[in-house]
Length: 498
Image 1 (cartoon, rainbow, N blue to C red):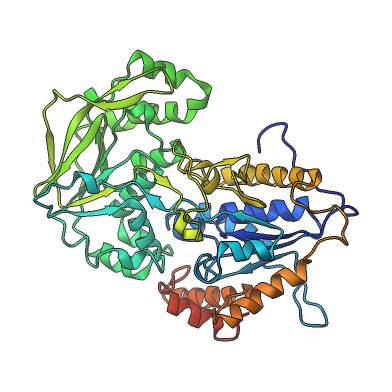
Image 2: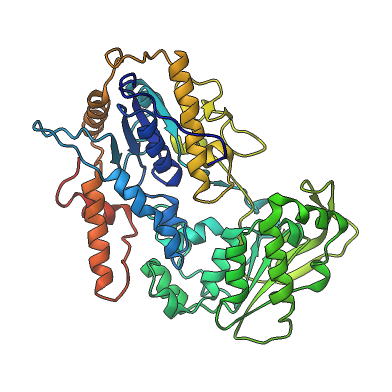
């Protein structure tokens, strides 16, 4: 949390019985639920998830060999799994998770706003910038996939993974090019070059594991439009791929890693400490090990802008950086020759924006053209009443899992100020709200039942969790993920859901 910004709870005596719906149960949604429960002790908080499983990015975005980064799900489970069932059988837990509830499909965003006093959107940023405009009119023989789709594939995402062509790795002659200099690009490179037996000890999706066993990929080239000083990966991630991948040698072109005076000024800035460490790792390990030969290679290229994808692969032109420190932009040097890299497998991770359709809000919300998030002021959605955002939907695709904690707390401070100022039309009296915690939740569930939506409650998730772990135990793996919605619903609802 930012220094000097303390999230204070409203006094229980004055706390309204606020009903809060949070759309999304990844880190941003879970941190928002925790902050809402702390800020308004008498509130009812319902966390709605489009998939039958919780945790979002933690389950489907974090690399399977990064189990340490998934530990935060234990904290989220403690929050979402609390129960408070009364003699009448009604669960009055302050926070309730409801899965398989897709906003815009199962229920409209406007309907949700009618049912709840406050709605917080925390469903991430899933619309990707792509490379379609680079494909030659004559077409391309290469398979071109976003890094997000590949991450979803090896993590067993039940909606996105089926969009990845089967046996796409086997179609490759052995070289893959990834456009983008962030952690997602590094994750994809690391997974594709890692020893498969090591990955078999993780929760990597079973279909992906079998394809990786047959993978011919022996070389991955990671390409950035800007220089090493502007790369967005973190030091921990970069050190891992640069120094800790057995059987993989790393390389970079010395002339592409020379820092300019403006680069040096950037790296002296306190906000660039991680970038400085990454550059030091690049010099001390990658450049120092030039010439070493291994069975697999990971090559880092910089200052190259992709220009065309054709039947031979992908071609680049040299980039030129201009502008002041911390604001350098890459432009193409039109006089430079095209450099062609032959490949039949191309991936990219070059930015994301909020997919407004994912929350059924086309025409209702406006995107910030700079960040790709929804237009907002400290989490309050511009031009909307009682509607808020957090996470990537609020700030765009930046930060790590922990960043979502202070981001959610800032949004809850805004909500608390709006409640206190009376701008939501809600009183601080516990007797005056039109809906209380039981009515909002029960009305939502009644509406979903009427529409035939099979809602997965926390008990249903525990059923899924148990099925996956039992399957994993038979082959000495932490779990075998169920990878289709039908499989997940069958496991969840076998012994009853909501």
